[in-house]
Length: 269
Image 1 (tube, one colour):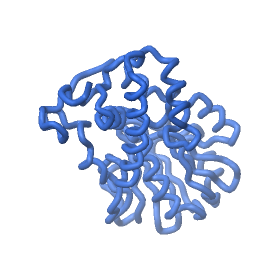
Image 2 (cartoon, rainbow, N blue to C red; image 1 turned 45 degrees about the vertical axis):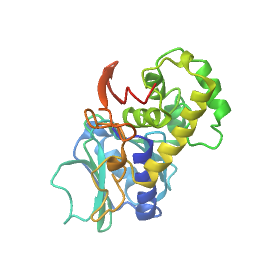
Image 3 (cartoon, rainbow, N blue to C red; image 1 turned 90 degrees about the vertical axis):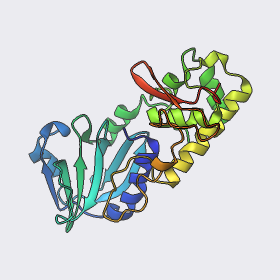
């Protein structure tokens, strides 16, 4: 599932490509993906200009000149492709937005959605999300205060979008590995020094993942050199049985509340 770095990569690349451009056509293949009838969806979007591509947690926000916002959540299996009608992927797109000769294809949205909202509806929808880990206002002090309220397991807490937004399965494991802390540790057991390491690892891992385009492999456009570049740099995620890059012992894959967990039980404590 796309997490903060993947959606931030999409945001940056799409802002450069469709920011300021006008939607010239829409096509809805799967009506359940949107929250209006295809006719109403088309009526509002047609000849509407994208003023800004923004991001909140794992959501992408397409701000429109009309004041509406398209809210995208890719969920599990969703991804985007931007190109021409000639170089489109051999896959069905649930929704397509046209910008003259270029099209933005929304793929894999069987669980995800693309909802057209007013500004007020958007605020209401996103109101329950926790703070963003890379927000300058999210300091070590604030992180420590939030952790003091929790009694559960570290990984379960890190992926709780109401507590802290944007981190999921991949980056919770990568952050814990970087901090040399097992993701199965209970939060009250963490020392002050471990909390400091965890906070710094969160900053480092997420910024590195953004720099290298996140871990999701499908390219956003033809000859895209960035998207998915972090996949080869993942240290533990989806690396069960492979040698730990730090100590050489095999990385262990386990399960925690139906979530996969990847960690080195030798150099993470």
